[in-house]
Amino acid sequence: MRLILWLGLVMTVTVAVIVSIGRSPALDGPQSPGPDRPLRVGYAIEAPYAFRDPGGGLQGEAVDMMRAALRRIGRPEPVWIHAEFGALMHELDMGRIDAIASGLFITPERAARLAFSRPTAAVQPGLLVAAGNPLGLHSLADVVGDARTRLCVLEQSVEQDMARRAGLPDSRLRTRTSAAGCLTELQQGAVQAMMLSVPSLRWMVRQLEQQARSISQARAQPLPELAQPFWVSSGPDGAAIGYPALAFRRGDRLRDEIDAALAAYIGSPEHLQRVSVYGFDEGLIAPVRGEPLAGLRGTATR
Image (cartoon, rainbow, N blue to C red; front, side, top):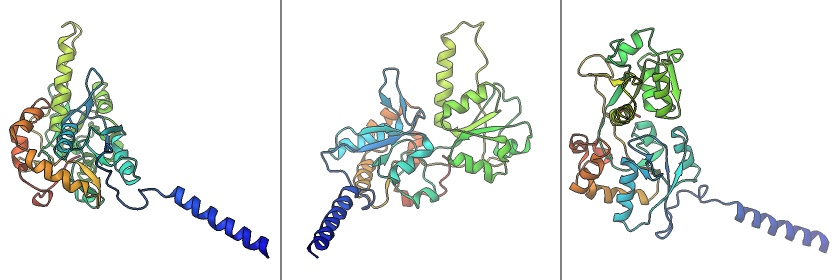
């Protein structure tokens, strides 16, 4: 009898220890890191929102927004954790990162899953095509209606959803995990267009132009260009506006602290000067200056 009681006590203690060891903050609900512990911030490489400079440093509009907000609430430089774009929300859900700073755009579906900060800019989607736009692509309707056209978008991006909603069959829709992958597809002729936010495409074109200046004219190839104009649907009323923002787990109080810091920073001279190097001018910032998430409608791309 004593042996049975002793074995029962041992098993009870063992189970209690296993449970206590196995518990994780992610399972206990959102946990804000303490003020002295650096935030773990996830990002995916997509200039100009997040990218590595020639020296290996992490730069970009979303990276700068997170850094500026953290400085204003007295937090240290975060620990930056790289992930593929399509994996960022999963990493946040699993508790392996505390926030996302990668130009993630607000959509109703994502807002039901994540806690977004106020938007940091208002941008439109753009279309990158071969030099001279030989197929005359100026809208998603043009892409859908031309059987010769294959389109590349980021995997699990809202551009992918937009293309599908417009009626583009999956047989003509390529997805890649990075913008660089889509650009390679375009340059090799595997696709005839790629769709991404205008600041991202402008940045890519600028980098291509810099590379072209470094090689001889004889070796230079015609560079891809932005389709001008470009509408999501046919006609000048077919524009779509997208809102990039920082993202957190729902219920994380740190989101409110950072959002308050952003409210004072967005549109300030320091902010405008800083993001201008990434191609964000006042025209992209003015629509969101002083605007909380709840004040915006018609969220769109990425």
